[in-house]
Image (cartoon, rainbow, N blue to C red; front, side, top):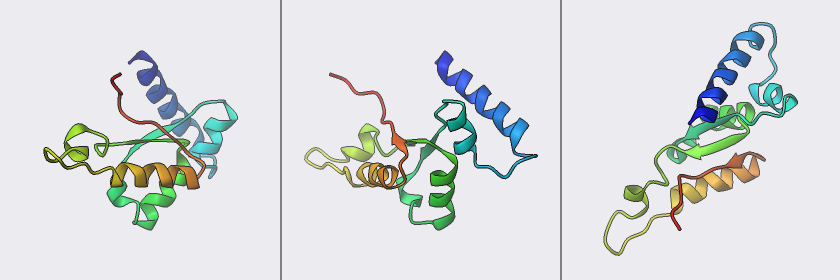
Length: 106
């Protein structure tokens, strides 16, 4: 949790310091400093050009907002739906963006 808070503070600092003087994407700025900048994404919106372009341009890592939670993946006793999270991972791969899922239990 502390790492997450530090990452948010760092991202906010990068935005505050650099966006007013540079048109360079956040992804490039953080990559130059060895930092991965992530965003929670909704696979349902990947068909929206502006949404998809912004994720690909500005972030180096994506995590599903809710698509990997139990309810959406297992909506019924014998029903599983991995389509949306698979779509997000496919998008991440084509854009050379890392992907991270929710906590897995062994």
